Length: 74
Image (spheres, rainbow, N blue to C red):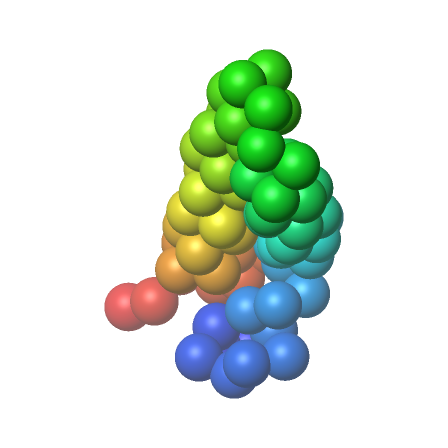
């Protein structure tokens, strides 16, 4: 029986890696936009910061949710 408590099984769920990578990339571009400092890049940086937060929260939710491939717990 597979338990989702093992770290390697939580990370291997579909979408966790994709959302984590997308969140890191969006955060990096947002930081670059903030260092440039023009008004348009600041607006884009805030949008990318929100997008990165969404991706990290989505990845965390996928890690916590039970996998559809696993048997239900009694």
